[in-house]
Length: 306
Image 1: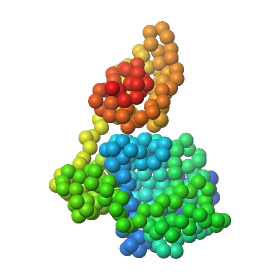
Image 2 (image 1 turned 180 degrees about the horizontal axis):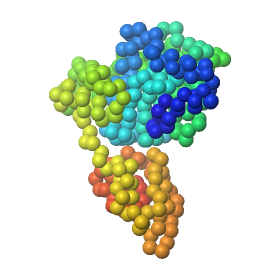
Image 3 (image 1 turned 180 degrees about the vertical axis):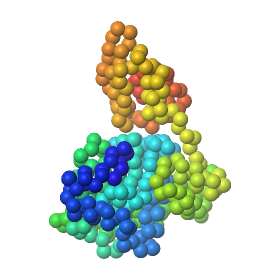
């Protein structure tokens, strides 16, 4: 199971969770018991994540607390991950979010659900990666029951999301991304085009790539975002390549901070800079690329680069 360069192979799963867990994980690869409505709802949730993260970046409004609004090229959506909580996996530079999508009227916490969530938690706890595990339903009464459940099968640290199929809130966000007349009908058509773009893709790609395909389908009615050629990882790689053997000893980032261990002239400096507004910082990098570690750190300390 590959999660942002983390590899969980057969022996790792068996050693940590046992043979039964590995057998269940392999069985899940054959697909679930979802009917047509269930698959359509899962597809809707893929489109929801794509639109949600595009809207977040366009408006500088983070998707959820304590997570930055990232450029769509930095957010990856995967449908059908090799994982226990496996329907949708959304990766940002800061966090991995695993979704289990359920479109049934009598959804409840069960031993099987607990098993999957607990196994995913145990695996992720062996990494340094921040993560979230989420169960998604479309019915308000099911959401309330799951959220307030006292069942012995409620997994630790599991979140419950309500995403009704009425889609009103999603259409409002789509309108913010439209370049045509912002009517309900046009927004619904664009949502359908985003879902079609996702279906036509490899089911695992960046939000930016899916949006580009959807924009083609809509003949330019949906905005696209310029590729970010100067993301932090690329900037660090270029600075390191240009300063081999001179200025840099170590320079890295984890999605919240930039860590450095540098030598300038006869002095050495070690520490970190916390970037308070990562979205603005990325935009500053796109406008003005720093050529040295000193410039990068000063830009990070300033925050928005203005």
